[in-house]
Amino acid sequence: MMEAVTQNINRSLVVLKLLVMLHNFLRKGPKEAIVGCEGSSSQSTAVRICMQILQHWKRINVNDHSEDLRRDSFVSLLIQNYSLVLISKVKLCDTYACFIEGNFCPMPYFLSSAEQKILSPRFIEDLIDFLSRIIDMHDKVEQYSSLPNIQRTILLSLVDEEYCLISFVVHLYCSFKQVTNYLYGQSDLDWKALADRIQQLDTHLIGLYSRLLKLF
Image (cartoon, rainbow, N blue to C red):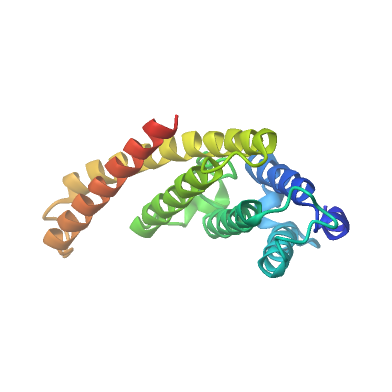
């Protein structure tokens, strides 16, 4: 894919199709697509592809149509934003690779790699932050109809991502709140600070869910 990107990096339609292919591979491919494997560097390759595209399209002249008649400022920003979203996805899934797969399904907890790991509240907040980023991307794709066919393809990938992510986040967050209730008063936690933070997350999640309903 790196070679295909290098050869077609000035062609907006091809670049967007390659980003969709990469997105689908990260979501549905083997775990090595995220974490890499011995003697390989799948993760850094995915990031390098996105970084190469991102840096090139930051510098590109959107008014130069000598190689690409479809090029405009909206398409340029779409390519840049999609690249940033995929970079964030790889980093998030790599950070929590022992807990989640590329499509945000939870990993079985009997796996040896997860046995000694403890879920941090930061994990939930990172998932919510990425959900917010995905919804922002969804909004941006629908702003204009410049390349309708490829935009619909991007939206299908985003909708699948949003559905998997919101399902996992809600399940994980509700479980966290239920467990926290059982532990109330049994530790030295600052319960007022925790309650305030949970209230903030409740409000944030409700807002994201309302935005998703409008998009769907």
